[in-house]
Length: 210
Image (cartoon, rainbow, N blue to C red; front, top):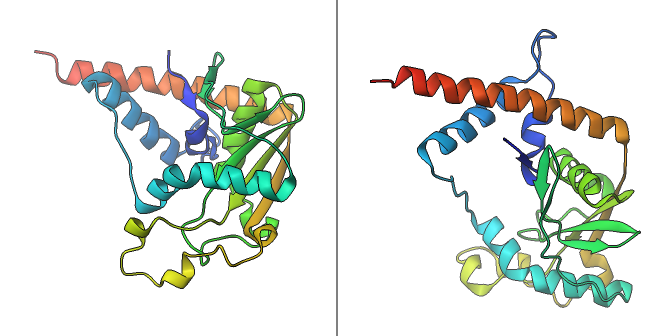
């Protein structure tokens, strides 16, 4: 049964232009990609220098959070799922909140205010985590830490080396509160995506039948 990763939830949550449709054009395209991966038994791997940095420096970003807020958070390694979604959050503070750690590529892309950091993709990701961990708060922590030397290449190093900046200026927090009505919408969209997924898988089979 198809379950959507929290990190991909925003891809199916956009509303279609036509009221007679359950999924937007973009959502259908995404589900078609999932159906193709399922039928041909492969998984698309998307990579970029920004994503690579995020993976490499995540421990440094968590340490920055701990240093600034006098906490002792550790990386979560538990993956959870329910009937509709699956996900693995970055930090879980039991009974308090879920934290997702984002490590911007450079000072140019670092959001200096919560308003600038408000992001629908991350919001839907967090709403999925709040469902799975049954928490009422989700927090995105944008942590500006040094970019690894091997990734900077020909860019201006001053945009990437940030240890000289006050640590408190290098974290921007964006907070979202749980909304059960939006979780109901997630369930509806996943069920619609599941229905379309099955249609696409069947179509691929029929069109390639011997």
